[in-house]
Image 1 (cartoon, rainbow over the protein chains, first blue to last red):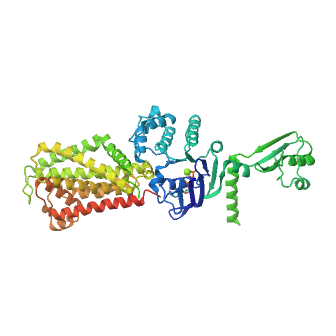
Image 2 (image 1 turned 120 degrees about the horizontal axis):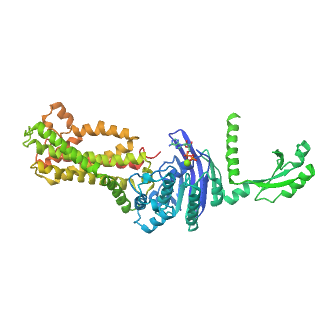
Image 3 (image 1 turned 180 degrees about the vertical axis):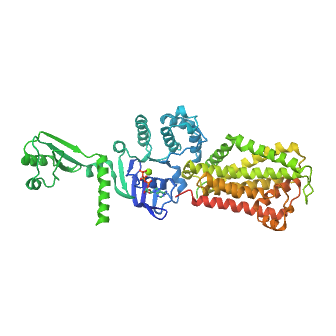
Length: 317
Length: 256
Ligand SMILES: Nc1ncnc2c1ncn2[C@@H]1O[C@H](COP(=O)(O)OP(=O)(O)OP(=O)(O)O)[C@@H](O)[C@H]1O
Ligand SMILES: [Mg+2]
């Protein structure tokens, strides 16, 4: 079953600004799902619609097989959301906030779990402070604790690690990984793409309110990420039209004095050997050979960049 | 149909009442002091005079009015300040995210507003009682008007809090609508002292019925027809609760 099925979700702010346009996504149950996109892509809008703080303009969503817009209360009890904007109640301490939060979800107080959350999010020594006295990173962690305090099945985090230092970020992710291993579905947005690549097993990229791609991390990197072959020569290179013809299909180009050839995607059969032999025929033996592989960040930049140039082409042409 | 989120509603009620209990100085002691100041001022300004039209001394007339005014203002303050602080600190999102329906939320907010009003009213009564020989003619009337008035003001506070974008907006609602209406509704004078034109206008001021009826409960007589007043206040209470519920339900000015 899918934890979330989003179907043709649309959102227009103030009847003018389109933030989401027919967004359809499936988040498999038990997955660790990265929702990526540049600033203003519509990630928070999507999450806020899930959280019920923003009204959708069109579309439907089902959570664990239940219609979100029809069975709000049922769904809300199974969902924990960390909003992007830091918010805290200035009147209460972290411990009180966690207690209240749990109560609002209709659950009896559970001090053991509250203590554990405080411990895991390194808030124990601040548990009795007034929230105003917490630092930005502590407040962010408190938000995460708050989203987890009713033990939701689906956890949605909108940039949970913004402003959290490296060390604590790592520990926060370890905690998320544990929850995920125990069966919790996790959907997050982040601008730290290496972290997303390392943690998540599924990824969707959205830009300007539209889904560009949504698949498993493995498939995305396998099918979309390309690798390149870089050959350095002792002599200066010049690509003649003959060379171009010979190397056609490998998009030959000279990059910082190196010959650069694009290879097959990871998921396809390797054409490294063929590329290397052809390059040798044209230029002789190279001094050094390196293979570079696109990581999630490169793919992200390429996909969201392509999107922009397409759009520019559309408006000028 | 979903079941009632009892623990959620109870938790929200606790949160909303703890908010004012935590700042007792401001929420309970201050209104009591203000009332005492009014009392001293009017005591010496008016002397031993009695109220024309009603056969009571001015003191016994004034005390229930001051109590009710403080209760109304505190009920309003409880919901409106919680809403506006919530919006400005962005914590209202937690309320929107939680599985608490509009009915449950409004119920919890209003219950806390009524509690605060009753606590303030009770404290004022204890503080002011030694200064007068006030009777409790109809306790049911005191409770009816006290609770209905708090419900109305609590609902208006919710609506005002939803409407306001800033503390300034909220202050405007408070200073230009709530204060004049409460001050001009017969706390300090009997409406029968007013010229006929203003009496007619006053017949449309809901706060007049609240204060008059509440006082009626103490001194056993009032300016308005009790049954007409009970009808008007009952209708006002239902109407304002329903308005607050509806606006919450549609997320008025709360959700984009
Ligand atoms: N309340 C609002 N009123 C009008 N437009 C809005 C509102 N909130 C967001 N938008 C617009 O909707 C678009 C999507 O915004 P959103 O916050 O969802 O982006 P995001 O992907 O979360 O970006 P970021 O990475 O910066 O958090 C943006 O163009 C933004 O300007
Ligand atoms: Mg965002």
